[in-house]
Image 1 (spheres, rainbow, N blue to C red):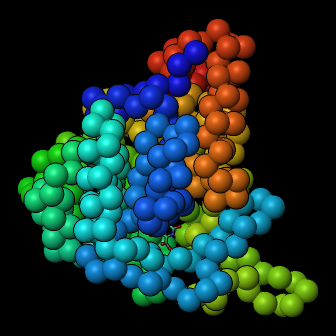
Image 2: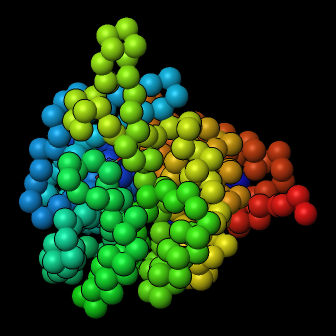
Length: 312
Ligand code: RRO
């Protein structure tokens, strides 16, 4: 039973991979994803200038998931491009994802020019949804700016590129965002980033649990799965078929992976549960997915991808 997939015409041996931000800060972490059963990796979102990120504590693992306000700690784009270049030499048949975040449209352009001038042969994931930089909005909620960014992006970049989106919660917003996305030659969208600006507290100490932004941070894990599935499926219904979907949010079992694929995802990323369990999780998730597929008589992802049924 195969869990292989194709995205932007590129073949991946496994549909599972890390979500940006988890196990992808440096070569040590990325090597661990490389050694795992994941089909590929995405790097931490890279900025023009390396960043230390927000003060600690800035990540809390909870029984139901996680809250984070990392604040984009990363080693800068050249570091990740160097690492990916090494991996491209070691494994010429594989392709990788480079996540990037500019703080404005000119930075996006500068990052894409650096990628063009490198030997990078993979896919770019443009992060439009970081919720954790104090004073900076989540770009994905500003529809006009998204359209402007994508217009510029496709003027300056020719390789396969997709966008990481925040979760949307209103049907009108899905309609509006899909209409914007459909104007561009996107290879994929990735839904969803964490649900921004949640608050977790410790009743015993009467304090917030993380330091940045008075405790506000992006929520991942169990609570975000229904929202993630809704976003994956709604965009699957609305986007032109050339724009494929990466499903991210609340994946900690093979059944969760199956549900994302059923909603229309072509690849599935793991964040909070990968952080909790480590890269071994990809063996477990793959085996659990294969068991479900076997029970249902499915041999490949295409047998059920996007084939969610309705009650009428
Ligand atoms: O680094 C972060 O704080 C972060 C980013 Br860039 C993101 O896109 N999503 C998230 O939950 N945290």
